[in-house]
Image 1: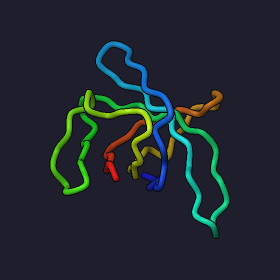
Image 2 (image 1 turned 60 degrees about the horizontal axis):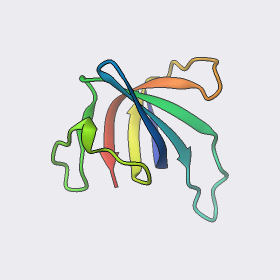
Image 3 (image 1 turned 180 degrees about the vertical axis):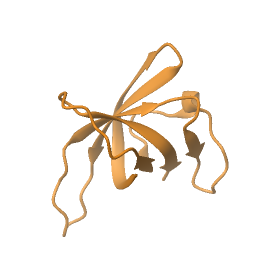
Image 4 (image 1 turned 180 degrees about the horizontal axis):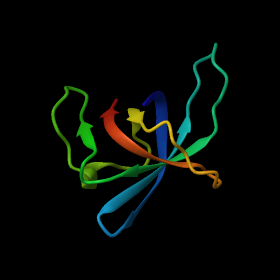
Length: 90
């Protein structure tokens, strides 16, 4: 598992029961920018709001900031895709 943080959701699509979030890292002044990642949000993904309360995937919106725990396995596609285990909306 890998933790990604300070990412903005730039696009949301849905396919069957999964949501696909395209995210981009929003660096602080002392960080370098990371690339774009497409995060797969399945019914098993835990989604929490700022207070740690559960959210539905349908409540995710473009422009939201998030941290996530994702799989360390990624596709070689552009953008790379991986599965989210947990998402914390900021």
